[in-house]
Length: 223
Length: 410
Image (spheres, each protein chain N blue to C red):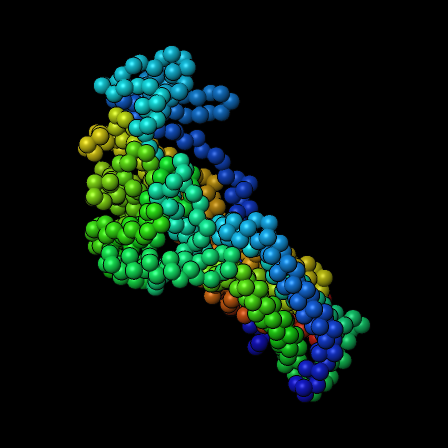
């Protein structure tokens, strides 16, 4: 049964996965170009001074901030909007699998693809930054991306949650709450500002469970 | 069962957002600015003076005896602060208590530093600049490489992004020869060329011994300073000054402040304790400022609700101390009401510019919020599961909002 769901979700997501992977490669290539441009025109040493002292690298890798966020949003929309239109979700509930398992598997599978994209981006970034900069800069740059990856994951789970919720009033409430939470992951102005990330990770880890309540409400037909 | 858990996680998220935004929203609407005095000490009348700015040009110039002054008279009381203006008004006397008073000599014999929470720990990339301490030119030259120091010292060339082995080895050897034990701990310097000269870096090693590392005529010079390793140093700050009285200053984990003097690196402790006790310097909560003047020295310790000033003479002997206080933030009306409405608040900002999830509890006034919320829940809603009451008990008004918004499904 799980294999069938995996295939179903893959069908929905496959083009998005490929497009995002392509965008990732393009963005990494673009940032290599940008970094080289800065180094050429500022001189290697001066460029390092800006990178170290003025967090210049955060501008060069700004796409890393937004790519996971957009990916999370797009995946959630592609996976769950078709389920909700014309009550298609009701059909899926007649399959030989519990409603909870169905929802959790769908979200789990979607997240696996998102995680794969994130890891791909992370490794690509690692490569790009280490070509031109020393270990200290690489470490700080990579640590700075972790809140953004968590933010993208949060966007995925919360978007799925909002889509699966049948009532528009509740959707608006969830939308406001989601905005409040996701902005917490994008507050940094310089490298590696987040300390004790465990709390932030725990919050995202709890998010997948919220969809069960929405799905339950949909199944019961409550508005 | 899982559905119930799911609902409570949604409630948790709502509480998280409410606790982060609502208290700040309330503060934004109701906080009022308090008028705080600015304290100083006049060597002319040997008394503390202060100003209070009421806005729209109305400023009180007073001394702590209660006498008030005109602006001109007040400036004349503080020649070491307002010498430029007084010279322009031709009101600067030639000497005061044997100390010459003219712009040049006052400027040359004055120095100032401060220690803020964000100066002690802050996000940084641990790569440093080693300046040539005796350059051929009239000013300091910015080097072409950076160095890292941890288990060893390495110079890196940005053009090739690789280690400069030869230079790194020379510095490594010089440090080991001076008795340095890797790994290094505190690395403190002044990485700018806009200073009169360069004293390199003061670095503490694995045994808490502090060394000075400089580059003189392209050669590494590492000297053991002999500063007591048991002082438990928290952070060192270096600032080169033409007066050459001290290399810099440092604070310890027990909130003591010392200067590192040019007299063979002997350290000199600065006043951090006050006669009231509660205004003793606490590096995480207060601001420390040290002003050196030709005639005396001023120390300011300031925090929420007070500004303490200690005056010492040029032999570092105490002359006087005084404190001005005002209502600290948590005792002001708007804040007190806020504490009654909200049982706690969640924030991510720290004074050190880090981002960390923090909860600040408003004990005991927050219990009022909890009690009212429980009452509201009982009145406005029928048949709630016990767990809902527990949530409101723990989180007060935030839980109330969350639990009322998200009705339980059976």
